[in-house]
Image 1 (cartoon, rainbow, N blue to C red):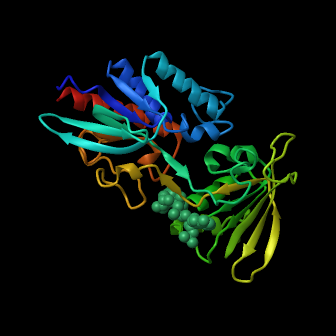
Image 2: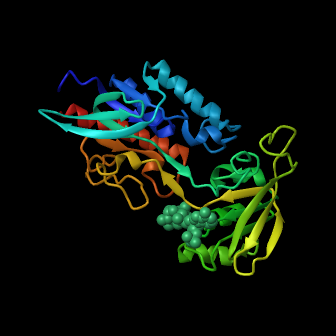
Image 3: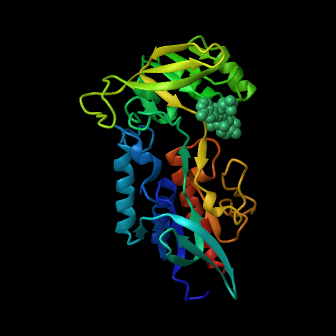
Length: 329
Ligand code: NAP
């Protein structure tokens, strides 16, 4: 091994996948740096309550869960640095190493990389949408659906996620509207069938959300979520008839796709058309990418089942596989 390379492992991302990988690296005495991004903790930090992470019988706030994981990592002595990675370069001299270039211009040299950058929900881009996340607007039905028992909700989108979300939400909500901009779904036939056969789901075809309205109309930019302000209604627009109408709903689930944060790897690591990292070509090291020494875990890899517990498990596996790869150098 070349002892001049500063880190054994640089982990890019500080969600459940990245932080779990960091814990396993620390316990194996692997000199590790975590690059946390601009928002340490990732997507879960904006989830008010996580009910499905084992070990928390009364649920746990997403922010608390991630801050506790971060403290656990720090207690093991792992360095966590806030910042965004701009580029990764593979060095091939006498021994393989990587240069991780930060947006700040700093360059970190490492023997291996675990990419755990996650994926961001694609939002509709409407005023008040971001402010109402956790107050009626959600990007994750599996995470937040239970808070809408016996309520009326709407799902936007026409793909597999939207259809699955609508079917899932119909199990405990009073009514589910599905709002789709075209007259046919993109989802698989099986998922569409479940929606069509479900009497609790009403599909609003050729429809687009135009406005998201909170319970108290407070003028921008002093929009305030205190005093119980939450989602109250949406205005939808039929793009065939030009008709507009107000839907009074308690929850709006946005399911129009996800963007994995993998652009900085383009040209180096093999990605799917949708941006997810391709792993698993190596028969033994299932989390390794097409580049030896670069591993990946969590939502930046997975197209389906984006769950914190899955990301954490994959982060563990990526660290263990990376360690066995490193031991062979
Ligand atoms: P998706 O397949 O890309 O579907 C996104 C949906 O949102 C489409 O219906 C699209 O409409 C609509 N949409 C996109 N931008 C919009 C906007 N700005 N406003 C309104 N609507 C908008 O995304 P996904 O459903 O998250 O699925 C992603 C991938 O995961 C897919 O390959 C899917 O098959 C897979 N997946 C599989 C499963 C499963 O197998 N159980 C479950 C979930 C996801 P248009 O159709 O008009 O473009």
